[in-house]
Amino acid sequence: MPSFYTPDLDNRSTKLLITGSEYNHIVNVFRKRPGDEIKLNSGHGFIGKAVISQIRKKEVVVELISVREYKKSTPEIAVAFSLLRNKNDNLLVEKLTELGVKHLYPFTSENSVRKPSKNTITKFEETCVSAIKQCDNPFLPECHEVLSLKSTLNTVTENGYIPLIASELEGEPLLGAVVESYDKPFCIFIGPEGGFSPDEFEIFKKNKVVTYSLCNRVLRAETAAITAIAQMIAEYMKLNPQYQ
Image (cartoon, rainbow, N blue to C red; front, side, top):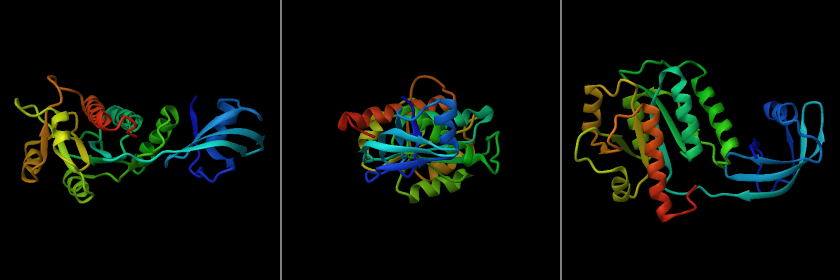
């Protein structure tokens, strides 16, 4: 059952008023009525079960039946990605949210085809909300502002992440082996459709960015991101089967 985004939900909640787009989804899309049970998702660690007590002109009143609190697992995962054409970066954001990535750092690089607009981050945030509602991910990822590749690399490093990039060279360690070798959180860097430029690889080299091998194929950017995060989470779940 899909959930409805209710950021006011916490473990003290007994009654909530739901308005705006979630009101429309409940009443006009799912056609819920008083007495129906629905699931709520706060996006910051709480998922609740509630019953609709009233439907007013612009708000739904719900009574909480139960609320479950989730704790963020560590280490948290971040992904830095180049803006992609044909809305493929929206697909990337959706799937990484479903997988449980906590921070998203979009950037522009020399070979980026798409440029950011004034609503780029807003669109990504809307995609994240839609994704957590579908997959019951209790944590809404944070979408950071679009920066240049160099600025993004500096930012994720300052935030305590170890940046990682996939390498096409033979002999590179598999991602699982890299994950086991460090005790800090990682940020996977995903390049544009045309790949990183020689100058950008030089930036990675100067910053001693860790490289790894993902598979024996050349993957599309969005496929590489999804594959890398799925592999990383699989490694973390070996140590913590309840990894969130």
